[in-house]
Amino acid sequence: MAETMVKAPAAEVSFIDEVCSIPGGEAIRSCIQCGMCTGSCPTANKWDYSPRRVIAMVRAGLRDELLSSNSMWFCASCYTCTVRCPRDIKPADIMHALEIIAIRSGLSTKRSRTPVMYKCFVDSARGNGRVYELGMMIKLFLRTNPFAALKMAPVGLGLFLHRRLPLKPSRIKGIGELKAVLDKARALGGAK
Amino acid sequence: MKYYSYFPGCSAEAAASPLGLSVPPVAKALDMELVELEDWNCCGSTPYWSVDKLEAACMAARNLALAEKTGLDLVTPCSNCFVILHSTNNHLKELPRFREQVSEALAAANLKYGGGVRVRHLAEVLYTDITPEAIGAKVTKPLKGLKVAPYYGCQLVRPNGFDDPESPHSLDELVASLGADVVSWELKAHCCGSSLVMSEQEVALGLVNKLLRNAEENGAQCLVTPCPLCHINLDVYQSAVNSQFKTRYNLPVLFVTQLIGVALGISADELALSRNVVSPTRVLAPYL
Image 1 (cartoon, each protein chain N blue to C red):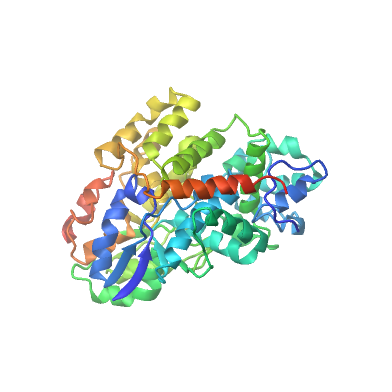
Image 2: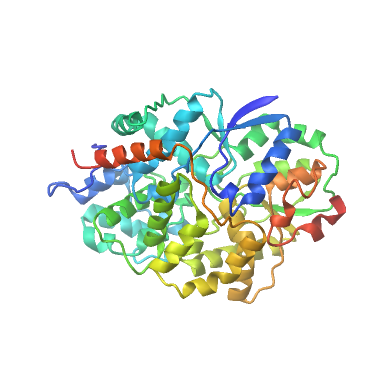
């Protein structure tokens, strides 16, 4: 099984191989469609396609239909499916793999704010070496719905009043070093 | 004295600062020397994993490379950092091609990781290395009569957990060692919604509502958790749950280090109890 991090899949790479190429996605072919993942998922009622169907769709090659759905973005990474799966296929990791492929392909849905939230989080971690929660939240609201910030005001105020919302980011000393590593990783991420 | 390399994680410095602040005094009282990993960076985190797994693994691997130089186990109090650092370690062991790519990226900063770090959760270290018995022996203010619901959340026990992933017991034993009454409740290892609280707030608050109701119905006076994300959702967002579901919860949520600290006679100030949004002072008053 290929382990390379394929950024832009060549035409001959099947959807299932794309998923298999991401660490954690390797075992998807062992799925027996028992539905344990769906039965165990605390958010499955919100998914366009349930976890079990998501896996069936990967195997059926329904790439764009699945990648543009809201499904995997509701995975809260509780790993209940993963510890219960009788075939050890790691459904939560498969959801992460699908999120990665959806973002790479520009297909991630706008019906969930999770893709944008994740991207804001990554920008923050990349920029300072540590996550700056306030900056990230502001960016998230600006990019999605600035008015939703009003609804968040009591929570933000609660954090601030209890000294849990630092007003400036903490930046690591080795930020240059970290950026060199991440830039190299990005360069290696292309198809080989 | 037991020595560990210590990885606080980003939230312990900010939105979960009661955790970050309560760890050092408790560690000291339990003869643990936690040496903070110098210039640690974000663990990689689930959001990063869901955007670019190679980059995320490189974030984790820089920390692992720095920790390897210390020769100590790497201990984190954050359940998400634990899962990410631990799983990255596994991927690097099991996937040679992926390991090569991560090594090549690390080399850009003259860093090297040989795979020799053991990643551990602070709660597991308290349970396994320090042990509930030894903690119990140091208790000066037994929490007699306090009804505590241990809340494990997910990532302490899944997928890399040291405890039963469906019905864990380690926190129960730690709480019992402090003299408190352990509340038995069904949802102790169910999901709180984690970071979805920022993007899909109603979904996450629905899960938090179920947790708080189940704990309250079983007589809990407070909850105790090791996880910063769980704490934010249950404590900071409790008022949002009350507005959304017309409920009237007033359930303090303590970090496990805060609860242990109270029983060890450490002051409320040192344990940063005033930083908990739902004030725990009423239920803890008899023990402070």
